[in-house]
Length: 342
Image (cartoon, rainbow, N blue to C red; front, side, top):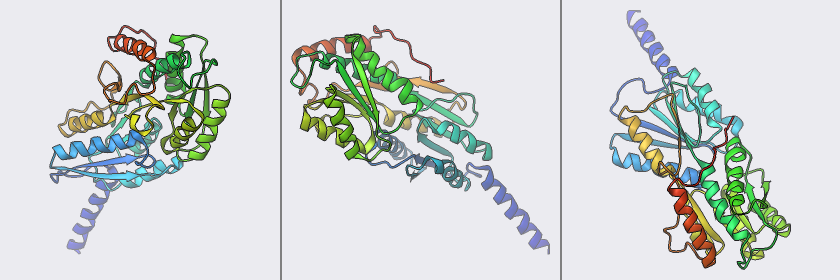
């Protein structure tokens, strides 16, 4: 009877530790859950996040990664994440999605030992969560300025309409308040009469619908496009090649995907930031509860002008004017006010 009682107590303690979340005891392993909201392939942001976690693991032999792809049904994310961390085996959950702040805060209440790092999101004051928000307004502003130069130029596919396009998979606060407004603000630094036609696909995979939207927008006068559409953006590239238009691309180097069509690429230092954030947590230096905005000045947002394909499709006049403006932007000479996400 005494042995049964002791075993029961030990079992109860183990269950309690699992319920609390976080690693219950030091087993010499630093366990990382990389929670991908969607799928990795075809999403530049998530591909870079996974690469950053893998870079960190390569530097730290005690690190153990689990890559989990949640799928696109956001209604399931909270229950999925709760199930995953209920085991109590993950020292840290790292993810990247503006919608995850509320979800992780809710999960954190149920599992008070679990810690979270979220990039591309902003939440301050929660002692279990550390967030980093990329200054996507800056990246969009840079790409928008290039788009403005192109749509007002005499380049091959430019037309007199002074109209640029933005196609997104879905709407969310960062897109509506930073990405699209930044794109337009950059273009209007070239000419205040420029307008933006903004369309939404409804998912991250429907390339056919993306192509249909793009073709319709081109028919109405759009000659330069930005896109945040995951795998669906291949429809835009095809339509731009067929009908004659230009694309500027967020987050990664995509010049080789459609040379002469993709004429400008932004950089989001997701890979570098995830690697750095995990290393800080591994070393016990994470300031939980803090939220940071990182951009050009911090080295996490920029424009990719080092690829040999940069300049393909641009006129010499447009490239010269853009390069001069970009140098001023990097030097902090272009002033702007970052819109609130509230």
